[in-house]
Image (cartoon, rainbow over all chains, first blue to last red):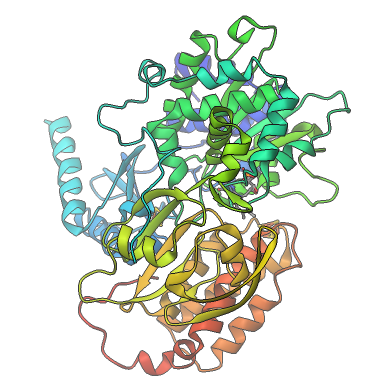
Length: 165
Length: 453
Ligand SMILES: Cc1cc2nc3c(=O)[nH]c(=O)nc-3n(C[C@H](O)[C@H](O)[C@H](O)COP(=O)(O)O)c2cc1C
Ligand code: SF4
Ligand code: FES
């Protein structure tokens, strides 16, 4: 496991935020996932050692908290809100549109054939007044109807094409 | 019918043209003056003033803030922690997001006043994991406040020091429950703790006395400091003081967040005058008034009874539109004001499908410790999903009710109630739709029908 120097630095800093090291487990998992893209097996042992814990103490968090994933995903992570307020304004259609645009299925086990995206249905993102909402990586997009979902997909594809050329 | 004007206290600067979330802008608008004022008072005076204000928690339960602070064990000799609940995950609720993203210093000032009042030396803001950008905004704001000596060592030249750190969750709704939040902050699964003995005020974070308050609540504390507890208590209605932010979503013309004096606006005024009424060609069918776990109200039904307002007992006879929006009025009619998330459904919605959507949420979010909650929420989801995507039977209504009735009161935390109230209320209010769903399904769906599950 190779973490970037700035990740290691942030890890050492964040541990000082707590009187009890174990509290830093979630922050460390976030930092590892941001750096590597997922939580590799060896990082669980590494974090446990860093915080004087047993690996199971770390693993049980990875399996409990939905944001952590044990496998790589597509380059971009599209999270579509599934919950009531968004569904009432067409969230299911929005999700379906993304899946069609990238010829893939919804769910974190799927990566689109071009490797660009993983599309996931998630629960309420606390932006119900501008439904349907979509989180692409860390950026929130509001009022994402079918037209806007297509536009966002086109943008991702254009960025991918620009990167490859 | 015409709605009163908004009274934007917490939302005062939010969305104002040119207002930005950096400290320079905050200071130009009088920022941190209330923190300076707090430092001229005795901590106990501030606690007493918050008690006098009648401020009730805005996170869902409506517990009086001053009373909560009064329960803190100050004799144990252990440090006292303050945890800002920024987990905002109750479906239909989105007020804290705007405070954090657009006016983070307001939250930090309210937090620091509350820390000073309670002799807290370490506060954590527990923000939901999906708000990664919000966490960065808060971290930047805290750094700015630290540089200006409003946070950190020897605040404002005094010998009082207090640190704030931001702690990110990772996608689990149950971290919003205060003892689940504490477990999560300790680096564990967010399994709520049993009360007694684990009342946060006595045995909270690291088994030290701990205060957990919602983001909006702490912003109101700053306003109490500004106008005084007595003046604050005069806003709103007796027992429901100050202003309230309502988050309206679903089938209205103008969804959004609006701030009014508590109890001074009715549900009808909010939905018709403020939010512009139903979408063209539609009529309102049901509304969930306080986050998705609050019991649903059915348009056309009436509520009659007696209730206490301050010291008086008054009779009420309300239609859905007449209900004043405060904790006690919504409580009196058998639902709750909760987190202020108002979800509106019009006549295009089939209630079986809406409930199936809600049940999927609660089943996904149960922490799994208590059998009635874990299994009950799962079965309610399975039954409603089967009704929509497989076979529906007339007896499913009774089956659902029997599952829901076996959960509340038998669990460690209030999630047990939260997950059963939707099913109980949907069946009670829209029972016919559940009994007839097998017939409804036979009819062809309109082309523009919305999928809910
Ligand atoms: C299942 C469940 C979820 C909750 N989620 C939240 C939440 O997301 N945000 C929040 O502020 N309070 C939430 N609460 C309420 C908290 O437990 C707690 O009462 C609140 O943070 C106290 O702050 P207040 O007194 O300022 O309202 C939740 C409660 C339960 C039972
Ligand atoms: S009621 Fe549900 S969420 Fe709460 S502790 Fe029990 S299983 Fe967990
Ligand atoms: S329901 Fe989609 S953001 Fe709340």
